Length: 264
Image (cartoon, rainbow, N blue to C red; front, side, top):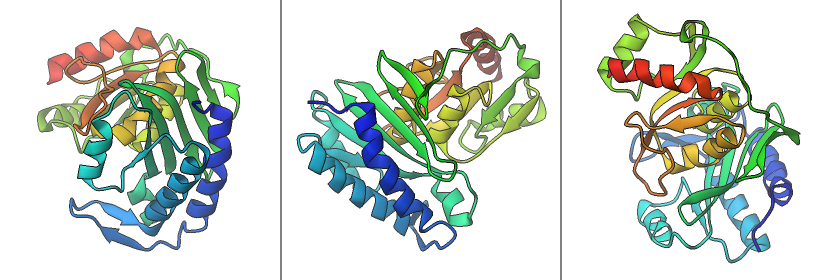
């Protein structure tokens, strides 16, 4: 039997608080082969969650960011099998630098879809969660669809310039179509900020499955829309990175895409 969101919160939240908060500002970090940072918190929380989830739902394996790529590919080769997708510490660079913006992200995948998504920010004790076809919540309060009735020129945009095509990044920096730009450095949490109406536009050039799986479902179930820069659905259950163009208010989707289309 598949879990529900309440069961998932009961597993994830206490472990995330214990493993992440106890290590924040007291970080032991190292570099991975690709040059990205990994901390003892990433590894400890992945190990703890893997054991806790297996104890409750032994038939569902776990794909974690801190696993070898060949293990990840082996798990993804069986799309009909339910599969956990975990980023134990989204925003590792923030965490290692003492910047208070990071989260744990966990999704349940099955047959090419995200069925459940949970993103938990332990510093603010904010738990974003969604179940396909059932809605999205923040700490048990439903995230309603929002309409901002704003032109692009008055919007706040969450944009990661680093991973965008250089020409697009340059134009966004020099000729922004929006009022103000932010880049917080934790992708899963950024999706949830948009889903909660804490930003109007979102753009990211390169996210992995564990970066977008849970957050994309939270935004979708809150009434938002998302696609890649090429106009494809963001969610593709595989290891190929995906770009993201997203909004909470569907009325902003066409003008945001239109501007980006002429800028690429």
